[in-house]
Image (cartoon, rainbow, N blue to C red; front, side, top):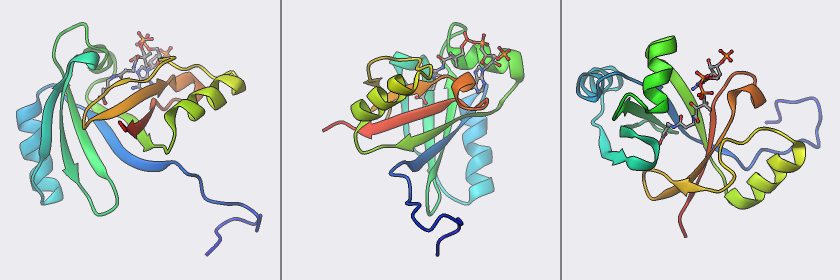
Amino acid sequence: MNHHNNSTSTSSTWQVDHIGIAVALLDPAIEHYETLLGTHHYGRERVSSQDVEVAFLDTPTSRIELLAPLNPESSVAKFINKRGEGMHHTAFLVPDIQSELDRINTLGWELINQQPISGSQDKWIVFLHPKSAHGVLIELCAYKK
Ligand code: CMX
């Protein structure tokens, strides 16, 4: 069903990959979210490029990423200090991360990374600044080929 008045509109190729939630301590947050969602976590790993440790919980159509800072310099530590724990970013899986980078640059919007960097789950990632997305930190990710 088309939910828009414009009958020519098509769906975006961006797929919600995960919702990132910033937490101070990973272990209690994992336990809490396992109980809340009724599932077990997986994919716990340290992402050194981002100074965070992450863990995932699947839902039928997407997943939650819990992320905790590895050190006080981590952008997640700064986020928690300033705003407290909570929703941190929305990540979209895109078919071609380089063409999305080029498109966003053409639009003049502020990218935090000009080149893809290595993220969790064997993916390339880049971030779009929240001020270029109505206050939401947006991550684009793509599987390493
Ligand atoms: N969501 C929404 N707004 C955010 C935000 C977030 N996650 N993080 C910061 N902001 C806002 C701040 O509130 C601030 O707004 P005001 O200017 O209105 O006060 C503004 O963005 C600037 O924030 P800041 O505290 O001054 O922090 P910096 O500019 O130093 O850094 C950001 C902000 C987004 C550039 C930085 O956090 C960053 O580079 N993030 C991308 C990397 C990242 O978050 N990695 C962790 C995830 C790892 C993973 O998933 O693998």
